[in-house]
Image (cartoon, rainbow, N blue to C red):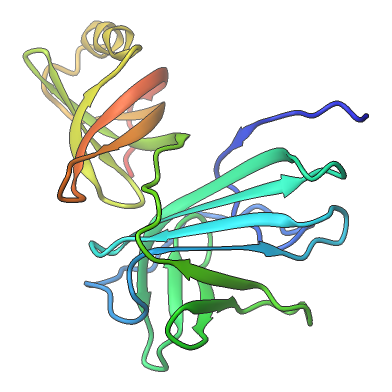
Length: 220
């Protein structure tokens, strides 16, 4: 049996095997209109693997999370990639996702399905799962952090979500923040973290599992 490897990859946003890595988004969105906010999932076709298990979280606040798991020939996930950002619908009702790279487009197919717009003749369908699970994966994100006393608040760059930070590696971040003399000023950070949600669906906090770096002179 072939050895399996697992990886958190960001930023990658792929529709099928062979898609290139994408650049930063430049599209600004207002409050979303279009398909129902919920969880949509399916298995996309893949030229070099059995399929790409794809899940899209559309949130009512206009943010999205996108996860793709490449399946190996045993049917198990081999690698995982993520994207996150803002969503909206254009005048034709087509769903637009703006995260890393140019916006991706999905056509609404009835009340419970989305079709990814792609040059491939094969259908790339996601089906709505009403009341699906919340996005709780650990992902690598970029954002700005401000520390007031011992409280750190992080604003994630692509979704715009902002919340206090906690977690196992927060103390190391605080030491680095202070040693560089930011003193209450925004600092650009890269972290691996999980989004922790309140009962009402709002973001309660970022759980920082691993502090990666602070970059002086950088902004979102």
